[in-house]
Each structure stands twice: as C-alpha cells, then as structure tokens.
Amino acid sequence: MSPSSDHPPGHKPFSKTRPIPGLSAFAAPGLKKADKPQTFIKIFRWRLPAGQTQQPKTVEVAGTFTKWQKVPLRLDAAQNAWQVTLADIPCNRTHHYMLLVDGQPVKDTHADGMAIPRTAQETQFALTTERGPRVFILFAQAK
Image 1 (cartoon, helix red, strand yellow):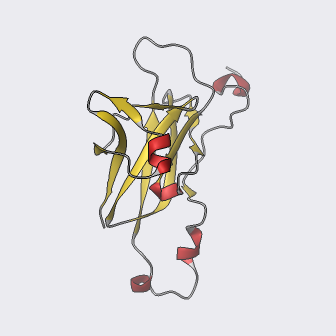
Image 2: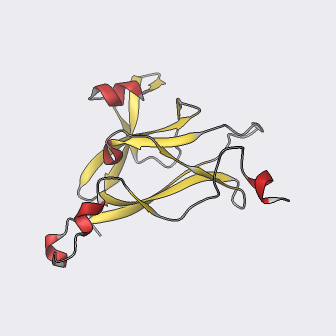
C-alpha cells in the first residue's frame, strides 16, 4: 500500500500529542510545579459506524477546551480510526464538546455524559436527541 493510499486526499498522517492553541503559556519557564495549573491529556477517537464504508473528508473536535475552535482528527490507517491527542486540557472542571464528521455533529461512544447546550457555540454544535439538543461532557479530574 502506498503512503498516499493510507490517507484521504488532503489529510496528513496521524500526529502525536498536540498542545491546544493558546494554552502553551501555562508551560512558561520559571513557574514552580505548584504554580502551574493542573492539566491532562485526552485522546479523541472516532470510527466509521458498522456497515458504513465511505470515509468522511473531515473529522473534527470542538469544545470548551479549544474555545470552540475545530481541531482536526487524523486518519490512523493501522487502527482504522480518526484520532487526535490533545494536551493541556485544564483539570478540575467539566468540559463540553462535540465531534463533527464532515461538519455534522455525531455521537461519541466515549463521552462521559450529555448536557443541554448553554452558549451559542454549544447550540451551534448540538446533537439532536429524543430529549432535545445535547452536547457531550468530558469530566476533567486532577491526577
């Protein structure tokens, strides 16, 4: 299999942990460990639903930890999954997020739970459910 056949056109190979834009300031030199806010790393992963064979053009995650900016997931051909690892997610708070496939919200089987959208950004990415619009919850606990 050629390297270009592992990834849809315009997609780069899977990358390792990426810091969230704007949060790298927390790692400023000179701060003592106790002065740095506690953060954690989260892997976001999405696979095609059973029976579906056509890979999407884009898979993205957007949430409170990215200030609702979309972060692309990369197709990892070895695991047959789209994924991204995000670092520097603040601990000790609940984060809301959505997974978007070709721009449309999709279910995340790894979500901690669901919540009613609270802001315009959350409403924009809300998933329609029997109980009304919902966004996913990520509980960020300290290590």
